[in-house]
Image (cartoon, rainbow, N blue to C red; front, side):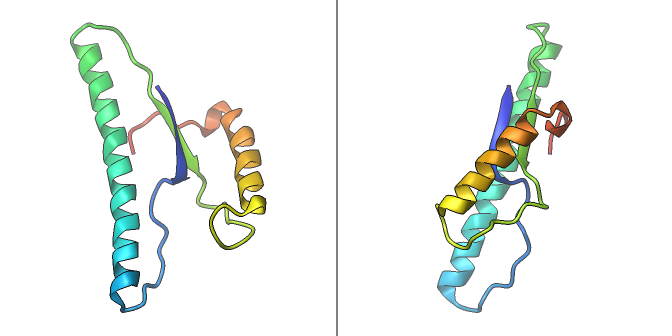
Length: 104
């Protein structure tokens, strides 16, 4: 399996305003990141179980948006941001060293 996360691997630290909408929004974001990490770990575990049973080897590799990448414009689905992500994906996806082989 080759998995591409369309996000950072870990939640980036941010200051949250002390309001319910702000706190809930951040909590949801962190929960989604955590569930993605858990799903990747499950995939690695299933691959290992498959190998231990003698059912064959399963290769698992994954990548995410590097922590060094910053969106060129604020907001969701901005054209400049989408193009930047597309260019970045083509660049790092083609580099074998960019793919992680260990579970997060």
